[in-house]
Length: 331
Image (tube, rainbow, N blue to C red; front, side, top):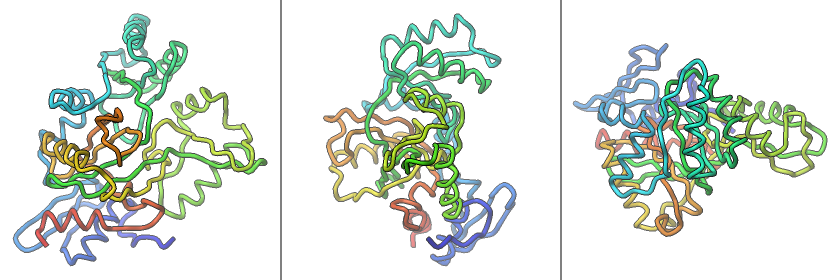
């Protein structure tokens, strides 16, 4: 697979810079150390700081950083979201009283997810906790993150999708697949992960890192990193499917998605006042009416990382990045 031109050491910056160059959009580096760039075309300018563009509303940007607040806002707009609760916790370790309060609430909604209300890239997310024992174990691990709040959420089973909306229109949908390895009957999971990471490094994809949540996820499958899976057996390594956590993506043909779904996704971007939005959906099948199939909007992002779409189907496509620039600059 040919690599994208290396303007910087960051793949997401490289995607946007490459797209601008292809379209003939001028850009200057304001500060490469913090990935701050300014694009210009005609009499319009657009700033990019890391993966955040200046065209998104600043209040909306802050709002979607709070997953609980976002969920409550969408719920009020009759948009399907998982049930959830937010807890204040002690940063140097969740206290026994806090633990019991979380467990009491979880009894109303098992299986559950616990996660930070304001972090991204799947950090600190423990999913599909089916029992009190699972939850207590995850809470012990969560305590090490030294956070002040914990979000408890209904676990929704299904396929994970990332929907990109731009200026009130859906421009791309990809299915996200959690990090996995396939057994060869000889190598343990540690070695299989190491070998897969070599391939991912060559493709400039984020590496698979087995953090506390990942080890907990394996443990609840009765596995550990020394396990040797049989030939051809697929082992899912994480409960989250982010590219940053070692996941992969497959592109969905927009023509296969019902109009009512596309209208719902577009409305979310508008309700959140986001010119560009990345919407995370969990549903059995995005090509079916999600209101009928029980699909839920899991999160909304104001700075969706373009590598999620760039690497879809393990192909390299600047399509989404180019659409963003074309829409904003009117070219």
